[in-house]
Image (cartoon, rainbow, N blue to C red; front, side):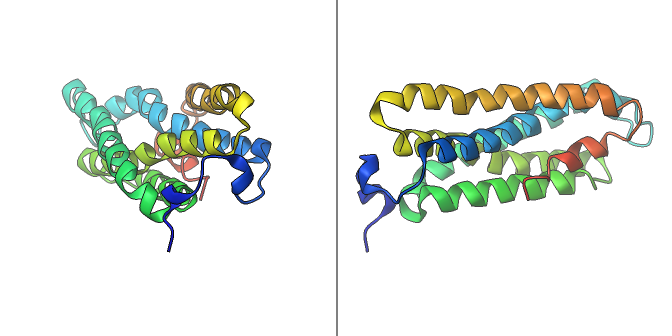
Length: 187
């Protein structure tokens, strides 16, 4: 049975998928990746003000770093298994993983639980970016690979901007947990 890595990089040998469709799907995935990573920064003031948890600035900083540690581990792990399982499966698994973890983050009952769930979400987030880049490059015609990759990756900044705007618009009216629930939308 051939491995995913055995497939030629030449897009003519791949299943017929429109490069535009692949770039769009990867773009949307990266939008949610960017949202999920930046949402913590948008919710820190609300978390610090949430008296029931009594989070200190030091604890808030530690919780913020847990997602980044998870991303590092997720990125390193996904690189090792993508060629075995295939990019599409890894992409779907990573999106499902981080979306579920974000939904569970909305249900966190303590700062410790939020920290663990942010780490778990980071594991999935770490798998999305390298897989989206690989899929975009793989399905794009040679003369458009760099442009398509740049367009796709711009979704990260769109997602970050959406997290900040959602925080400005929603946090005065809802609990910070609602911001994490939005991160479960890709499910």
